[in-house]
Length: 496
Ligand SMILES: [Zn+2]
Ligand SMILES: [Zn+2]
Image (cartoon, rainbow, N blue to C red; front, side):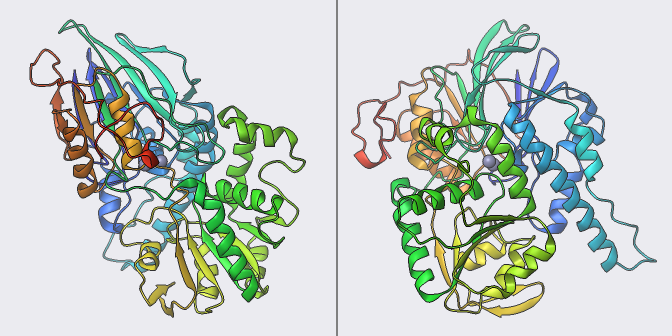
């Protein structure tokens, strides 16, 4: 059996890993790499393998950095099935088409800028139509059901607690040639316990090999229980000044969590009834998908869902805008109000108009609630830059920037270590989906806790997996005291 790392290696985006076994090729995820424009295009359009040669694709969740290159894979000849949960499929329906739309606009923009006579036209990576076509290959599976993928390979999806429909993939692999059986677990993106709405992540009881993400491999999140208090404080202070709160939020997950949190705060009388506007057509559609998939809700959310008149994503002063006119009209409205809009890293979309209109007024606040990649406008705001460019024009940052990471959908260092160390039988760990520094920090954490064979692969690194080699297993130390505040699950104690 061979394992090759073809994306999200020592970086966060472009998740893609290849398993070769019994002459079959299984791809785990096929995400978009997101970086600088020129690098991004080349990297995404050329596959390091022939798409026709892939037999089957397993998709951990709908985020674009995991699913976003699927339409291109299909366009280039992949005809096999794409397995994912039903919520992931429903989310991809909107997200991949949205991504196709963005690709088309991007190509149009680049073509308008180039010298018409000298350079050939830029083609979109894929179109909305390509995205629609790729959806036909999606096959849905339920959590917790083991099914045969190809000869010698069985798969089980466990709940990852990261976004709606997200899954941890457990593969039971039987290599006929070597006469060897092993279990490989891929975290996809690992969520957190006690996030609003979603069920907590599940931990497989046994696995020989783990491929784990490491987005926050060196960081601890703020305690989720503090989120309500902090959000209430920001809302109340801004409301007193009559300002606007602008929240750049990912259409999937973050928007719904913020709406859910605001609704709870209003119900409890902790913040005033003020207008809340979700200004993102994609987020509005995604919210509809959330409403359909209550099988993914945790107990508390399910209970509220049963009782709530307007549903958990609705309340009296909440509006979902769809038309551009409604969105523009918000510019002339006075605060206090809360505007939640995409994109989450302030790279494109309606959020840019709201920032442009609000950023120079000190009464306003910009509340950053998600991960901001390098070189994005969102990261510049987080880094405290005093002047930023929006639509090519400079603006002074006078609104107060509030950075919170309560809502992170990724597990922190404690969650990631806890997950890996709670799995019995683990002999080898591959660390992906994290900046190099964070991936290495997580590697050190595992090594300190007794797992010797931990690798942070580079792009295109390939490994022949042979469990008969002696150098793998060392007993995991399960006796060290864990600081109480990080002992999320209470199952295991280890060194942080
Ligand atoms: Zn994700
Ligand atoms: Zn991801």
